[in-house]
Image 1 (spheres, rainbow over the protein chains, first blue to last red):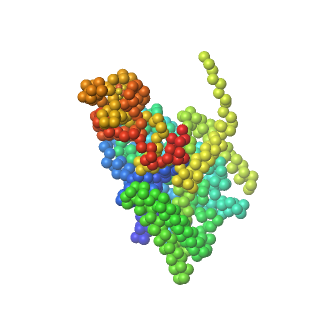
Image 2: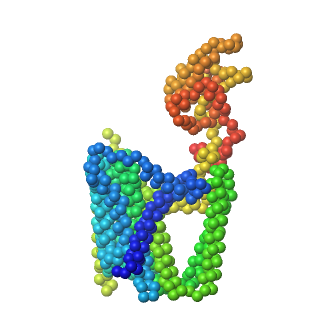
Image 3: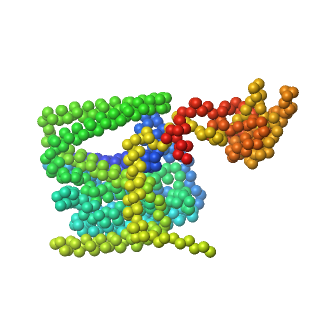
Length: 427
Length: 178
Ligand code: SF4
Ligand code: SF4
């Protein structure tokens, strides 16, 4: 490998890690604000650095400082090695799964090709399942090594749940694999670029709605999210497997949970929502029509910023005397900034329309647009996780097992059978 | 033994998906209408904006005064007797005023033990103790600071209804939705 290739790999790894890490605070923020808005509340809005409140985002800074400096208690009765190992597995294994997710089509500049994926594996999907199964270990280790009955029960519950839901999850993907004929995630995304019956994009969710449903339900169970968050139960088993953890050790579990949500969303997007495909525009169409598309997106962006600026100014006017310190000015500052941004976009638009474009611009634009649309889809699925959490109550344990073994498993098998027969029939 | 008959869950319930979608629709409706009009949400900006307290709300106690500024209380111990939490401690003393027999030399209420039942107010024969201060958040740093003395009780003002920042009729006032 040349120096150039090494640099590219390092940049890609950094991109993936930083994206996953930025999604964590955003998810926490989304969770709090989403919960608040759904429950007719405003949500956190008080913490501030100077005049900066950022609609509650600063709370996350406060939280992370707090969690770092809390007293770190290790109970005497734990099995030290596994006790310390568990949070690290929980916090860092989900990053590995991100490696196989493609976030854009290959970037072709001149004679150089750059794949937008850290690991372009032919068995990408299997890699995902293999690594996701590893995170069961963190729960088993944490539950057993804590040596307390709450942790043990929580660990047993969570690991039984994850193991049982892994089966329908894997089976639901099989029917998708039969349709696309490959386990390479980039190939799967490429196959979703065409149109189905000339109107719908050829996404997995339209080709295999049942398997999409099963997969999404199992993803909720795998990430231990409501309605399947039986690993914790405030009334019966306290915090479940992380009862005995405190400070940053708990923080790692917490972070791992959110990263695995992001990773699951990325995989759901890749398999069922067309991954990086911009609907109705495949990569070639993006490159061919780049001029008009860039112009349109600049206009839309500047309009959006004008709207945001107006809204923020309105907010500032309404809450002029709310805090009676510099925080009152925040709305004004940000509204001016967003007006400036929108003017800036219009200037770019004029400059763009009147100059000679470098030869690499169209393909770079296609890549950026694809990354953008991919992140947008991932954020939507993340929002789905939050939305479901604040809608549904927790399942009872026997209901959970019934649903998994008697509901989803036969459904996934039937889906494979029907898909196979249809494919045979249509040939 | 009484056997409660429960309706068997229908197929629709067992499918979950329909009910789940219904639930999601409800939460989405809430979210959407709230996002469109953040200012109509039934919340108040609490420490910056206080809600009005309805009449008859039992807040922190206060002792009423005579015209000359002396406490109305005649140290009859009726309130301390009526108090179910035994949290009123009174020391009676002979009053210098010849028209008044006794006055409280000490009058302490331990607010941590008080259950805010209002019995003391009902029991008082001379309307000397009231709970109309409208103070509902009682916070301090030490346990001992929650024992309010006679001086503090005398200094507590009744709720100024005109100074209420949020009208009791305001749709955002949670009391209004009870
Ligand atoms: S309100 Fe009830 S508990 Fe409190 S001091 Fe009066 S009688 Fe005692
Ligand atoms: S407050 Fe009323 S009831 Fe209590 S001692 Fe004084 S006069 Fe008697």
